[in-house]
Amino acid sequence: MKKVKAILIGAGLRGSEAYAEYALNYPSEFEIVAVAEPDDTRRTSFSEKHGIPDEYRFEDYKEVLQREKFADCVLVCTQDRMHFEPVMMALERGYHVLCEKPMAADKDEMVQMSKAAERYGRVLSICHVLRYSPFFIKLKKMVETGSIGRVMTIQHIENIGYWHFAHSFVRGNWRNEKSACPIILAKCCHDMDILLWLTGSTCKRLQSFGGLGHFTEENAPEDAPLYCMDGCTHRDECPYYAPKFYLEHPKAKEDKLIYAVSEDIMPKPVMAALEQGPYGRCVYHCDNTVSDNQIVNMEFINGIKVSFTMTAFTEKCSREINLMGTKGQIKGNMDLGIIEYHDFVSGDEEIIRIHTPEGGHSGSDTLMMKDFVHLIANDGAGRSSTDASISLESHLLALAAEESRISGKVIEFQTYTGDYK
Ligand SMILES: NC(=O)c1ccc[n+]([C@@H]2O[C@H](COP(=O)([O-])OP(=O)(O)OC[C@H]3O[C@@H](n4cnc5c(N)ncnc54)[C@H](O)[C@@H]3O)[C@@H](O)[C@H]2O)c1
Image 1 (cartoon, rainbow, N blue to C red):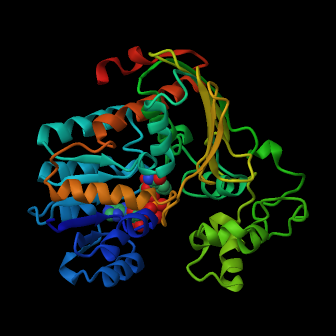
Image 2 (cartoon, rainbow, N blue to C red; image 1 turned 60 degrees about the horizontal axis):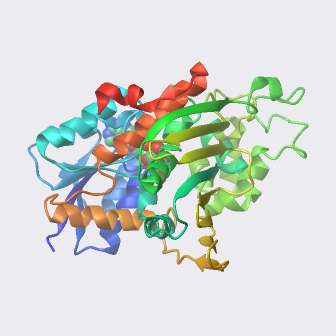
């Protein structure tokens, strides 16, 4: 297999840890030959780790993408509203591209990106990593082989976890639609994609309800200060009291939330960063706008009815699904890697335990990279299951759900996508 050479745009959490690690683990298959990253510390430590010489370290994606093509592909791992321009520039330069989800926050930009990939004959893959998870692959096979007969209804829940929600969607990077995008797009485009894939169909119509119901000023306890450490008297009964949250909650270290607060994770520097930093804010006094609860009801063209719930108010961060068919039922929990199968014909019941490989998103990050690298080694011959032309639909579905949530109207999805497909 030909060794694939890549340029990384954005050496943040996803770029440097979820994807570039593939180069360190499979050096004969993949190499990062250049990086664009404005943060000096991140750029330097990333470059040193990957042996990138000074002349291939850039501060901005424009600098590297203005040069003549010198690699096979570009990984675009900047924040949500910074995908469009580097993707378009990279495609125009003749690179294959891997782009983080969401493709873009804007409907027209998404469509332009997908069309540009087609026009230039380049791969544009979107990081819908869940399609590579052994859990969802197993469910897809079970549905396709008719193990539950005809699928009639699906219930799917994205349990975000109160701690994850407070960190990312109240205090953190994805809290405000102006700087990020609506949560149904930012987080749940994965779920829309999985539902489109499992139903093997497209949506006919949908409705959505939800909003920001809890993390608001009106719900602030009396006299709660702007920062937890400004003498908050509710510290003992508040699950979000920052020092306790970041220094004691097991997920703070396990899911690396604490590194967003401070590079040095010893108590003293963490407390100092929380005093006046974004992660030390009272969760009821932030500039967050994204919904903390949302449901989407969908009717698919092939008759399947789906109800989807996204909620902040759960203990665990996990995805659960219940597929109800004419001859059986499947209940699954992705994060536990457990599928419970009931066969209505034989009356048999089976518990299937899915082997979860190492790595993020239950091993899916690495599996997706493997697929992408092999595709590019063949100069893009073949189509990935997360090609932009496929992923576009889940993004549009998320945007349609948001439109319904805001307008209170039922959306005819084919009319909504109309001109765009
Ligand atoms: N596929 C998934 O399941 C998944 C999971 C989490 C996050 N994401 C998405 O991944 C993306 C990145 O998230 P993250 O957590 O790594 O964010 P991050 O903020 O850690 O990383 C983004 C990086 O881009 C850099 N950057 C900013 N301007 C730049 C420029 N002009 N040129 C080059 N680099 C620039 C930033 O300095 C930063 O280091 C987001 O869109 C996010 O929604 C996807």
